[in-house]
Image (cartoon, rainbow, N blue to C red; front, side, top):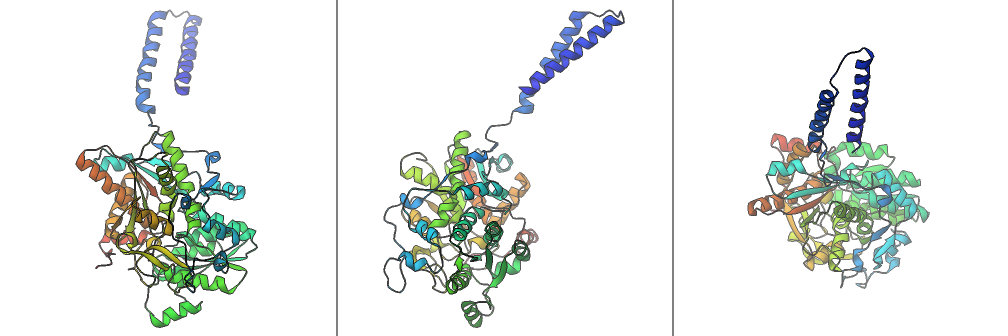
Amino acid sequence: MYIIIHYCIFYSIYFLRFYFTMLQYSIQIDFNVYFNSLLNNIIIYLSFLPKIMAIPKDARINLSPEDIPKRWYNMASDLTDLKPPLNPGTGEPAKPSDFEPIFCKEIIKQEGSTERYIDIPEEVRDNLIYLNRPAPLQRAYRLEKALKTPAKIYFKREDMSPLGSHKGNTALAQAYYNAEAGIHTLTTETGAGQWGTALAMVSNLYDLDTTVFMVKGSYMAKPLRKTIINTYGAKIYASPSEYTEFGRKVLKEHPETSGSLGIAISEACELAAKDPGTNYSLGSVLNHVMLHQTVIGQETIQQMEIGEITPDYVVACTGGGSNFGGMVFPMLGKKIRGEGFKDTQFVAVEPKAAPSLTEGQFKYDFGDTGGFTPLLMMYTLGSEFIPNSIHAGGLRYHGMSPLVSAAYDSGMISARSYDQTATFEAGLLFARTEGIIPAPESCHALKGAIDLALDAKAKNEEKTIVFCLSGHGLLDLYGYEQYLDGTLPSSDIHQ
């Protein structure tokens, strides 16, 4: 509208100046002929405006900083018959005191809470703005065109955080609560490095020191992660390491091991348990991590309402469950309560290297390899299982979040797994159509979305698919290079 008004005013002034100039020099001009010519030009211009300015309202849906959620949603409030964590020594339900050697009291309180909503501290909410929250919801028009599918595909852009992934959402909260509790150092594990990067960065906001144990296979394949984490001021070790008793034990028994998230968690927990001023910070799996990530799904619900989007499928990658839980849980909770999403299907996508949902057992197991954690009721491949090395290191975990596991066991969600060769193929297509290089983890969700879109094409159905792009892959280019030159190995545990 502004352009139309501006154009009309401009040409009106131009017409009057020209007309009076002609009068000044006594040049005769047919007023009617000139006016009709001007009017025709305006009409021709306006006829092109719909083509020039017709940007669909669902092309990219943004929210304002005021729309950042004020509360986290707790999935534990809507899942019945959840099995509590057990103390491995007594076999009894774990008490808050069992967690105190490694967690601060507020985190322990959130871990056991069944309240539906928990307020986000103002300081945490304010800092979420600097992680580029709220994150946009965008439509993948060019991907749809390349697939020649009648399906609509949308993606939530967690890749736009300065940290490169969704991991900062819980890193901020955990750093805040630990600083409030007087803790001076945090220890943690990291797979591909996104979580370690996030915790290293936000620790600076609260004057915390951070020590990161990065799975050795990823540490060697992604050397720039070490540079980034050191740049943010944290220490980083390849796990298993010589820095802990458990690390030395694993190296002695398996000197050539590529490590695992289970081993890295054990090393981080060991350090935390030895020093009362040090706590452990977890990037996935446990309930409080799922809680903090629900800002993703809550924002997405607002954006779908604005864009009048009703999803047939919501898709996210799963390793420990934080990205999937963050995206899906707010919607799944509404579905359970009869408040919407009646016909929406929720799809978890995991790697064939660690297919805990699709091939694991639902039973009590340790969250780490060394047995430092309580026993968790979850889908697991066994706490001593070491997956094949894959570029999606953030999904390379033996177990699954107890909340995600409970939802899967009850039939509320479905799951599928892919080999990394198939997921990198999907990532390459996305890069060449949408211009975004997705993280190897995100490629799993992308592959799931593409397959659903192709299924809609085969059935000639107009489905709506929403997936979470959990992070960018600009530090994972070695994996893309291997795919491009044909040297990327299969990640299937059966090969």
